[in-house]
Length: 260
Image 1 (cartoon, helix red, strand yellow):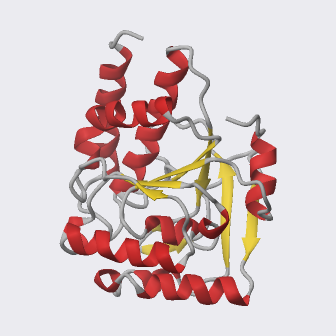
Image 2: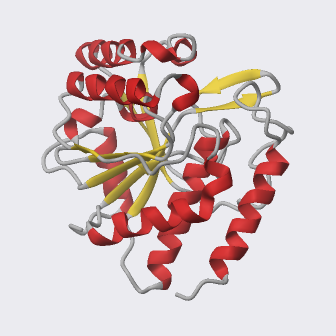
C-alpha cells in the first residue's frame, strides 16, 4: 500500500494518470466491473477483478466468464481476473459469512491501495451483499490490527417505485462524489465492452447512454435497516428488502461472535 489518501484516490479516479493505485475490484456479477468502471479499467495497471457470484441466472457461468474476459480485453486490461468467490446468482445474501471469510485473505495477503465495489442501495440483493462482504472484511482486518485499504463505491442503480435510477448514488451527507466524463474514445471502448455481454442484452440498455463514471468513498452503512424507502428490490429480485436486512443482521451477529 503506497500511502494514498482517500481524497487522493478520488482525485486519481476523476483524472487518472501514472502511477495508478493498486486496486481490487469486487463486484457481484460478470459485467458489473464494466458498468461501474469499464473506462477506468484501462488505467488501472495491475488491477485485480473479483466476482462474488457466477452470474448464472443471466446465462451459463462459463459463458458469463467468457463474456467478461472478452470485455476486459477490449478495455486493455492488464491485470488479473480472479476466480469467482463461488456464490450462485441471487444467493450471495444467504452466504454472507462464508463469503466474508473468503475475501479476508485476499485483502490481507496482497493488500491493495483501493477497493472498488458496490454501494448499499437496494438495487439488487447481490450488489448489496457485495457491499456487506467488503465492509465486513475490512472490519475483520481492522479488528486483527491490519491496515485496511480505502473502499470506494461505483454507481450502479436503485429503484424509485418501479423505475430504475442508474448512475446515481443515494444521498450521503458530507461524502464527496467525483465524476469522470468519458471522451469519444472511452465511450466507444465501453460501448464495445457492453456488446460483449450477449446474455445481458435485455439488461444493459438500462445503463445507456454511456457518458461518465462516478465514485465516492464508502459511507458508514447500517446493514440492519433498509437503505432507502420501499419494500422490494424492484424488478431485480422477489426478495424483500427487510428479508435481506434480516440475513445481514444475522451475519453481523455471527461475525461479531468470532474471535479477532
